[in-house]
Length: 249
Image 1 (cartoon, rainbow, N blue to C red):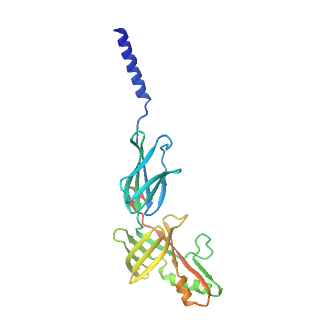
Image 2 (tube, rainbow, N blue to C red; image 1 turned 180 degrees about the vertical axis):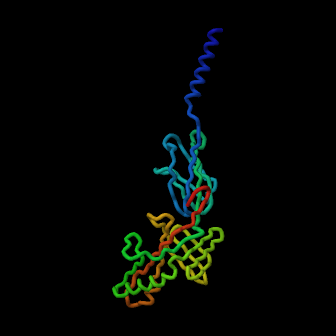
Image 3 (tube, rainbow, N blue to C red; image 1 turned 45 degrees about the vertical axis):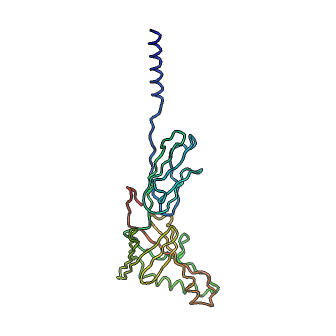
């Protein structure tokens, strides 16, 4: 009888010791905001070498993810939000949940800062290549003069309606629709279509670089100048702070 009781006590102590050694299970939680059409890695603390892992997205039309040597790589397809889960396939449990917020280009206030000044190595204002070296200075002066009335113009972009407006201090007003992806912005208004190259301005918070290709226009105007390239860069500053899912873009 005493032996049975002793064995029971030993078993209870062993069980208690085993429970105390087991670490509490807690799902790692992360959040990330990404532009539509962009790809980004999410930084997580989970050790991906401990077990076999797989990824699942609640909405694959918005974003999906893959595992690579850098961790969790998230690819986005359209604006919205979804949850991506990192699942420990060995133990059939969720190791990490990543809330993904995907943003389409939109803002209640973007200001056109105009063409960058001459001599800016990071953002050249006007790029002109021509055989006749007398022509580029003339073209640059003309382009900068044309832009003057629009410096300081305020744009709005609505991702729900895909409509935009533009208004200058002098009262010039335009409105229409727009299309955007990670590399281009197209404005459609007054039976016109303006297409710009689009990229984020490095070293500038909420800044964009828009580029207009005017090569064909000036080749037609100066057929004997040997023009091979005419491009104009514009700096836009986004003053609208967009809140989405508790995150600031």
